[in-house]
Length: 300
Image (cartoon, rainbow, N blue to C red; front, side, top):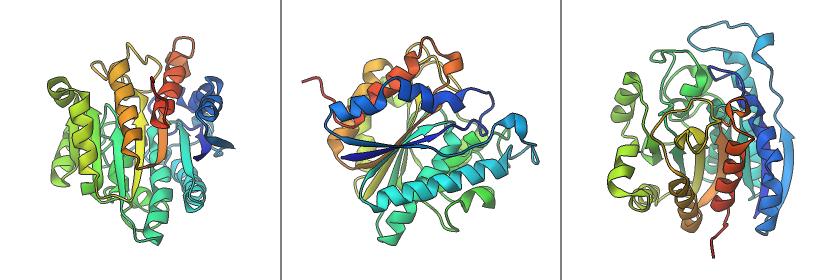
């Protein structure tokens, strides 16, 4: 494969500083070299320009740093669309999870042009299905998935174009364990497929990821969005919003290995790596390992 690394060093959507350093941490952990060692061609496109919160004014407490989040995501969407149109793979390094609005908008634009179906596998402790009406914090990294299915503030749902980027029935949430009440209601109402940590505890990762991928069987493009807080903080301490009780090391690798075996992934992003909270870049190194598994690294 020809893989294009795109960094988005933005933490404007988050509630604490630090994930803006995620792309650098993942690069330092050797992402390009690992992928080349697997036989892939790697092009590092550098970073989408973003601004820091200290230089911005919050105009709306329900949509914090909205103009700059929209600007960065719009730039990202254009870059991702260009890569996918060339038949190549965007690998987006975050940054907080609000950047997914840009990544998905870019893939969706290409899929829409070809009249093809886009599916999203959203691996995250959280639902990210809030809106400005339901969010308890106003932090936009809790809103990207709802925006991508056309729910929420117009400024977010229209990133990359005034259309719904992905059908809710072609979205699968995986490893979820922390939902706000408003998110629960939206997820049920829109028929989002969801596999929580309880499902993984009861059935095991092998069964759950197979069921999840069957839900996405009919898609032509598969975007995988991995928030590192899907993993337990014991394994990945350096994440934006840690929640106890997440995936362990082998569950996470089996998940990404199975995604690779499925053979349908056309784009990948990994977000919410926070070096400030990390231990000697452990979480970024784990991110590199998981990306490697998604792109074909095998035990034997």
